[in-house]
Image (tube, rainbow, N blue to C red; front, side):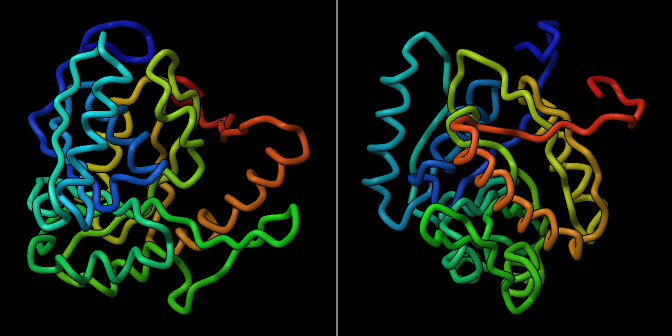
Length: 234
């Protein structure tokens, strides 16, 4: 395995499940996690659809050893760490449907509530302030964090290049913050940053609309880097 400097590292044994892993963001995250050695389970409402997606990813990247498998969402929720990668309006309900499996586990919410109006993207603020907070309310026994909100799916899923962005992590649970940052920092080109309590997920999520608008304006895919932190890679 290798990190952003090309040196070796060891991935702590950890199975990561992705609820809603058959969408663009879920597929991209699955292949990236598997590429650095995480045993990754793509979850879906249909186990057959999940298996089909995995076969497609394996065929797309034949030169990479990818520990990928597919399962229905309850199977993905049985993993050590679980990512909710569904569309934003299904995130809380999907998590709630496997609440028993998620109890006591780190659950990463990566959805952004957005609406496209003409050529512009507008942020939608859920009643609880953020999708991450809604997921936490739906699975109160889980340790929810918010992360990956500003990472372009195309870049995340392109194994030919590092991701090249910072990932802000928000949570009310120190264990969730630490575990999420550990996973993020294994992805080439990614630097995770502790952005504080889960309440900060609201501005983090809504800022995604600005990034998407920049993509439209400049016909590119922008990502976020923070300077002045005095940290490696910053």
